[in-house]
Image (cartoon, rainbow, N blue to C red; front, top):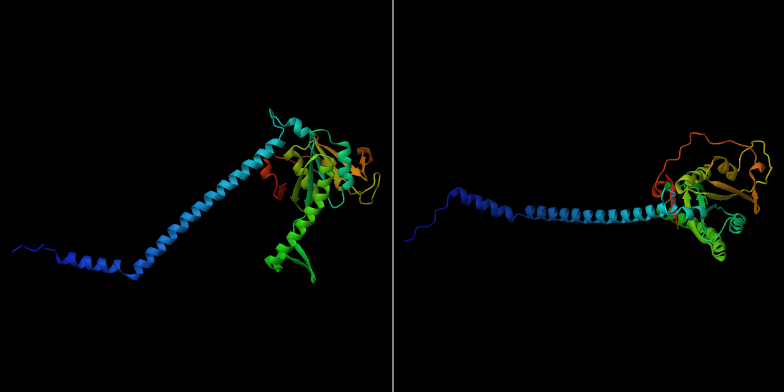
Amino acid sequence: MEEKEYVPVEAKDFYKRYSARALSPEIVVVKEEIEEEIEEEIEEEIEEEIEEEIEEEIKEEIEEESRSFSTAAGGTSIDRVLKDVYVAVGKDDTDVLKWTLDNAVSPGTRVFLVHVFPPITYIPTPVGRLSKGQLTEDQVRLYINEESNKRRNLLQKYVSLCNDAKVTVETMLIDSKDTAKAILDLIPVLSIIHLVIGTKRPPHSRRVQKKLSLGEFVRKNAPDFCEVSIIHEGKKVEADQQVNGPIMPANTHYPERSFFACFPVSCKIS
Protein backbone atom coordinates (compact mmCIF):
# COMPACT_ATOMS: atom_id res chain seq x y z
CA MET A 1 0.00 0.00 0.00
CA GLU A 2 1.46 3.26 -1.12
CA GLU A 3 1.79 6.04 1.32
CA LYS A 4 -0.02 9.19 0.33
CA GLU A 5 2.12 12.26 0.08
CA TYR A 6 1.63 14.26 3.17
CA VAL A 7 0.46 17.84 2.71
CA PRO A 8 0.30 20.09 5.74
CA VAL A 9 -3.07 21.61 6.59
CA GLU A 10 -1.59 25.11 6.43
CA ALA A 11 -0.51 24.53 2.84
CA LYS A 12 -3.95 23.30 1.84
CA ASP A 13 -5.56 26.41 3.32
CA PHE A 14 -3.06 28.64 1.51
CA TYR A 15 -3.77 27.09 -1.89
CA LYS A 16 -7.51 27.39 -1.32
CA ARG A 17 -7.20 31.08 -0.50
CA TYR A 18 -4.85 31.66 -3.45
CA SER A 19 -7.22 29.92 -5.90
CA ALA A 20 -10.15 31.92 -4.60
CA ARG A 21 -8.25 35.17 -5.08
CA ALA A 22 -7.11 34.20 -8.57
CA LEU A 23 -10.70 33.71 -9.66
CA SER A 24 -12.02 36.79 -7.85
CA PRO A 25 -13.76 39.31 -10.18
CA GLU A 26 -12.09 42.15 -8.29
CA ILE A 27 -8.66 40.76 -9.10
CA VAL A 28 -9.56 40.38 -12.78
CA VAL A 29 -10.82 43.98 -12.94
CA VAL A 30 -7.69 45.32 -11.28
CA LYS A 31 -5.54 43.32 -13.67
CA GLU A 32 -7.39 44.77 -16.67
CA GLU A 33 -7.07 48.29 -15.28
CA ILE A 34 -3.33 47.85 -14.79
CA GLU A 35 -2.95 46.55 -18.34
CA GLU A 36 -4.93 49.53 -19.68
CA GLU A 37 -2.78 51.96 -17.70
CA ILE A 38 0.38 50.35 -19.05
CA GLU A 39 -0.94 50.55 -22.61
CA GLU A 40 -1.90 54.21 -22.13
CA GLU A 41 1.54 55.01 -20.73
CA ILE A 42 3.21 53.30 -23.68
CA GLU A 43 0.98 55.21 -26.14
CA GLU A 44 1.72 58.51 -24.39
CA GLU A 45 5.46 57.82 -24.50
CA ILE A 46 5.25 57.02 -28.21
CA GLU A 47 3.23 60.21 -28.88
CA GLU A 48 5.71 62.29 -26.88
CA GLU A 49 8.62 60.81 -28.82
CA ILE A 50 6.87 61.57 -32.12
CA GLU A 51 6.10 65.15 -31.02
CA GLU A 52 9.69 65.66 -29.90
CA GLU A 53 10.98 64.37 -33.24
CA ILE A 54 8.63 66.70 -35.13
CA GLU A 55 9.59 69.69 -32.96
CA GLU A 56 13.27 68.90 -33.45
CA GLU A 57 12.82 68.70 -37.22
CA ILE A 58 10.96 72.03 -37.25
CA LYS A 59 13.61 73.59 -35.04
CA GLU A 60 16.39 72.38 -37.33
CA GLU A 61 14.58 73.71 -40.40
CA ILE A 62 14.08 77.13 -38.81
CA GLU A 63 17.65 77.27 -37.54
CA GLU A 64 18.87 76.43 -41.03
CA GLU A 65 16.72 79.26 -42.41
CA SER A 66 18.08 81.51 -39.70
CA ARG A 67 21.66 80.67 -40.68
CA SER A 68 20.88 81.64 -44.26
CA PHE A 69 19.91 85.08 -42.97
CA SER A 70 22.82 85.39 -40.56
CA THR A 71 25.95 87.44 -41.30
CA ALA A 72 28.06 85.58 -38.79
CA ALA A 73 31.80 85.64 -39.37
CA GLY A 74 32.87 83.11 -41.91
CA GLY A 75 29.32 82.68 -43.14
CA THR A 76 28.69 81.94 -46.80
CA SER A 77 25.42 83.88 -47.08
CA ILE A 78 26.71 87.42 -46.58
CA ASP A 79 26.35 88.39 -50.24
CA ARG A 80 22.85 87.01 -50.29
CA VAL A 81 21.86 88.91 -47.14
CA LEU A 82 23.26 92.14 -48.58
CA LYS A 83 20.92 91.76 -51.55
CA ASP A 84 17.82 90.95 -49.50
CA VAL A 85 15.24 93.72 -49.20
CA TYR A 86 12.50 93.74 -46.58
CA VAL A 87 9.33 95.67 -47.36
CA ALA A 88 6.80 96.51 -44.66
CA VAL A 89 3.37 96.29 -46.25
CA GLY A 90 -0.10 97.15 -45.01
CA LYS A 91 -3.50 97.51 -46.65
CA ASP A 92 -2.41 99.90 -49.41
CA ASP A 93 1.33 99.88 -50.05
CA THR A 94 1.44 99.02 -53.73
CA ASP A 95 3.43 102.18 -54.44
CA VAL A 96 5.99 101.16 -51.82
CA LEU A 97 6.55 97.75 -53.38
CA LYS A 98 6.68 99.19 -56.91
CA TRP A 99 9.38 101.64 -55.82
CA THR A 100 11.30 98.73 -54.30
CA LEU A 101 11.10 96.65 -57.47
CA ASP A 102 12.19 99.63 -59.60
CA ASN A 103 14.96 100.99 -57.36
CA ALA A 104 16.16 98.47 -54.79
CA VAL A 105 16.25 95.18 -56.66
CA SER A 106 19.20 93.69 -58.52
CA PRO A 107 19.80 90.19 -59.94
CA GLY A 108 19.58 87.66 -57.13
CA THR A 109 17.65 89.95 -54.79
CA ARG A 110 15.01 88.38 -52.57
CA VAL A 111 12.09 90.50 -51.40
CA PHE A 112 10.56 89.75 -48.02
CA LEU A 113 7.10 91.18 -47.44
CA VAL A 114 6.69 91.97 -43.74
CA HIS A 115 3.10 92.32 -42.60
CA VAL A 116 2.38 93.14 -38.95
CA PHE A 117 -1.16 92.66 -37.71
CA PRO A 118 -2.68 93.09 -34.22
CA PRO A 119 -3.62 90.06 -32.13
CA ILE A 120 -7.33 89.28 -32.03
CA THR A 121 -8.76 90.15 -28.61
CA TYR A 122 -12.20 91.47 -29.51
CA ILE A 123 -14.53 90.31 -32.25
CA PRO A 124 -17.21 92.50 -33.90
CA THR A 125 -20.76 91.15 -33.61
CA PRO A 126 -24.27 92.53 -34.29
CA VAL A 127 -24.45 93.53 -30.61
CA GLY A 128 -21.04 95.18 -30.50
CA ARG A 129 -17.43 94.13 -29.94
CA LEU A 130 -17.13 91.11 -27.67
CA SER A 131 -14.08 89.42 -26.19
CA LYS A 132 -13.15 85.96 -27.43
CA GLY A 133 -14.17 84.51 -24.08
CA GLN A 134 -17.77 85.63 -24.63
CA LEU A 135 -18.10 83.68 -27.87
CA THR A 136 -18.08 80.01 -28.74
CA GLU A 137 -14.98 78.32 -30.16
CA ASP A 138 -16.69 77.96 -33.54
CA GLN A 139 -17.50 81.68 -33.66
CA VAL A 140 -13.92 82.62 -32.78
CA ARG A 141 -12.48 80.14 -35.28
CA LEU A 142 -14.77 81.48 -38.02
CA TYR A 143 -13.64 85.06 -37.41
CA ILE A 144 -9.96 84.09 -37.29
CA ASN A 145 -10.33 82.23 -40.59
CA GLU A 146 -12.01 85.27 -42.16
CA GLU A 147 -9.17 87.53 -41.04
CA SER A 148 -6.57 85.04 -42.28
CA ASN A 149 -8.24 84.97 -45.69
CA LYS A 150 -8.22 88.78 -45.82
CA ARG A 151 -4.49 88.83 -45.07
CA ARG A 152 -3.85 86.12 -47.64
CA ASN A 153 -5.73 88.07 -50.33
CA LEU A 154 -3.96 91.27 -49.33
CA LEU A 155 -0.51 89.74 -49.61
CA GLN A 156 -1.34 87.91 -52.81
CA LYS A 157 -1.54 91.15 -54.79
CA TYR A 158 1.95 92.08 -53.56
CA VAL A 159 3.27 88.61 -54.32
CA SER A 160 1.83 88.86 -57.84
CA LEU A 161 3.72 92.11 -58.44
CA CYS A 162 6.97 90.41 -57.47
CA ASN A 163 6.19 87.39 -59.61
CA ASP A 164 5.48 89.64 -62.59
CA ALA A 165 8.86 91.30 -62.02
CA LYS A 166 10.46 87.82 -61.78
CA VAL A 167 11.74 88.55 -58.28
CA THR A 168 11.91 85.90 -55.57
CA VAL A 169 9.44 86.80 -52.84
CA GLU A 170 8.55 85.48 -49.41
CA THR A 171 6.04 86.71 -46.84
CA MET A 172 6.44 87.21 -43.11
CA LEU A 173 3.42 87.54 -40.83
CA ILE A 174 3.98 89.03 -37.38
CA ASP A 175 1.30 89.12 -34.70
CA SER A 176 1.98 92.18 -32.54
CA LYS A 177 0.23 95.14 -30.93
CA ASP A 178 3.22 97.41 -31.60
CA THR A 179 4.10 97.56 -35.29
CA ALA A 180 7.16 99.76 -34.87
CA LYS A 181 8.67 97.63 -32.11
CA ALA A 182 7.97 94.40 -34.01
CA ILE A 183 9.84 95.74 -37.06
CA LEU A 184 12.72 97.16 -35.01
CA ASP A 185 13.12 93.86 -33.16
CA LEU A 186 13.22 92.04 -36.48
CA ILE A 187 16.12 94.07 -37.89
CA PRO A 188 19.00 92.75 -35.73
CA VAL A 189 17.61 89.22 -35.57
CA LEU A 190 17.59 88.81 -39.36
CA SER A 191 20.47 91.23 -39.99
CA ILE A 192 18.28 93.36 -42.24
CA ILE A 193 20.49 95.63 -44.34
CA HIS A 194 17.73 97.39 -46.28
CA LEU A 195 14.18 98.00 -45.09
CA VAL A 196 11.56 99.82 -47.16
CA ILE A 197 8.50 101.26 -45.47
CA GLY A 198 5.73 103.57 -46.66
CA THR A 199 4.19 106.67 -45.14
CA LYS A 200 0.94 108.50 -45.89
CA ARG A 201 2.29 111.74 -44.42
CA PRO A 202 3.65 114.22 -47.00
CA PRO A 203 7.28 115.36 -46.54
CA HIS A 204 7.76 118.59 -44.54
CA SER A 205 4.34 118.16 -42.92
CA ARG A 206 4.35 119.40 -39.35
CA ARG A 207 1.73 118.62 -36.79
CA VAL A 208 1.15 120.19 -33.39
CA GLN A 209 2.06 116.98 -31.57
CA LYS A 210 5.12 116.47 -33.80
CA LYS A 211 4.44 112.76 -33.74
CA LEU A 212 6.60 110.73 -36.07
CA SER A 213 5.07 108.51 -38.68
CA LEU A 214 5.77 104.79 -38.44
CA GLY A 215 8.49 104.99 -41.09
CA GLU A 216 10.16 108.02 -39.49
CA PHE A 217 10.17 106.38 -36.08
CA VAL A 218 11.68 103.17 -37.43
CA ARG A 219 14.37 105.05 -39.38
CA LYS A 220 15.39 107.11 -36.34
CA ASN A 221 15.65 104.05 -34.11
CA ALA A 222 17.01 101.42 -36.50
CA PRO A 223 20.58 100.11 -36.05
CA ASP A 224 23.26 101.91 -38.05
CA PHE A 225 23.84 98.92 -40.33
CA CYS A 226 20.24 99.04 -41.59
CA GLU A 227 19.23 101.46 -44.33
CA VAL A 228 15.57 102.44 -43.98
CA SER A 229 13.95 103.88 -47.10
CA ILE A 230 10.68 105.75 -46.54
CA ILE A 231 8.36 105.99 -49.53
CA HIS A 232 5.55 108.51 -50.01
CA GLU A 233 3.36 108.22 -53.11
CA GLY A 234 6.02 106.27 -54.97
CA LYS A 235 8.90 108.61 -54.11
CA LYS A 236 11.67 108.27 -51.54
CA VAL A 237 11.57 110.67 -48.59
CA GLU A 238 15.07 111.89 -47.75
CA ALA A 239 16.18 112.18 -44.13
CA ASP A 240 16.38 115.99 -44.21
CA GLN A 241 12.71 116.13 -45.24
CA GLN A 242 11.55 114.49 -42.02
CA VAL A 243 10.18 116.10 -38.90
CA ASN A 244 12.37 115.66 -35.82
CA GLY A 245 10.88 113.44 -33.18
CA PRO A 246 11.57 111.09 -30.29
CA ILE A 247 14.26 108.46 -30.36
CA MET A 248 14.20 105.25 -28.39
CA PRO A 249 16.53 105.08 -25.34
CA ALA A 250 20.17 104.55 -26.26
CA ASN A 251 20.41 101.55 -23.96
CA THR A 252 17.93 99.56 -26.04
CA HIS A 253 19.55 96.14 -26.30
CA TYR A 254 19.03 93.66 -29.09
CA PRO A 255 20.39 90.29 -27.91
CA GLU A 256 21.59 87.81 -30.48
CA ARG A 257 18.95 85.14 -30.84
CA SER A 258 18.14 82.38 -33.24
CA PHE A 259 15.27 83.10 -35.58
CA PHE A 260 12.81 80.61 -34.11
CA ALA A 261 13.07 82.36 -30.71
CA CYS A 262 13.12 85.93 -31.98
CA PHE A 263 9.65 87.00 -30.94
CA PRO A 264 7.31 86.86 -27.99
CA VAL A 265 4.74 87.34 -30.74
CA SER A 266 3.72 85.03 -33.52
CA CYS A 267 6.04 85.05 -36.47
CA LYS A 268 5.55 83.02 -39.60
CA ILE A 269 7.43 82.79 -42.88
CA SER A 270 5.80 81.43 -45.98
